[in-house]
Image (tube, rainbow over all chains, first blue to last red; front, side, top):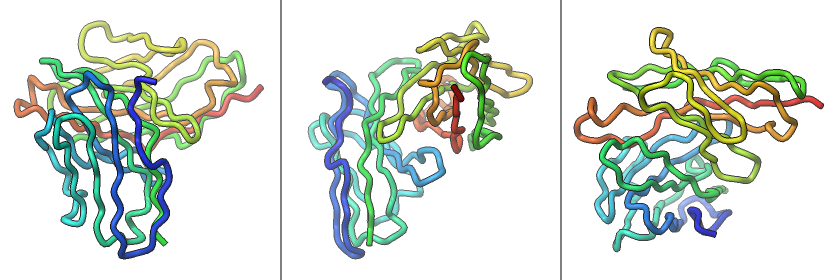
Length: 116
Length: 119
């Protein structure tokens, strides 16, 4: 399978714990995105990388959230001191580099986080 | 700021009938518009996009969408619905690079429309 993969698919944690999610993009894609989707809503943008550089961050990305893409390949999203409001589906997407920026983003299956 | 509205939370259509899922957008500058479909327990799948040119774009699984600049709409259509088309559909927008300059790549999504095709 050459699509975007995410691990784990499900995570249940207690409030106050730290969690980390991993995303492996399509291998030739330079751009990687993180989104959050809550029930009944569309995905909301969190952050975006071009290769290893984090170029955009949403104001939704509080200081408890940090994302990395150290070698320009896979990415991790860490949430520290989780809160119940962090419960959501975390989606990763990737796209290829193109000068017009019009290429579609390909999404992974998501990691569903439940904070008890 | 950019935004997307999908005015219908749910659309019901009989199998074999034409379907339309509505989307309107607001963006400063020229838009790039996308439709995605989400099946239960699966990620979003790309259906089609409008970048420039012909206002009618064709995509996967027989879907098409019509870009209307004056009405700021990008409605998704299919001539004959299948039961297997039942899913959650999302419209998304971003500003073209030529306008945004710095290159904002974030997509703004609507809330989604649940399509149910009745046998």
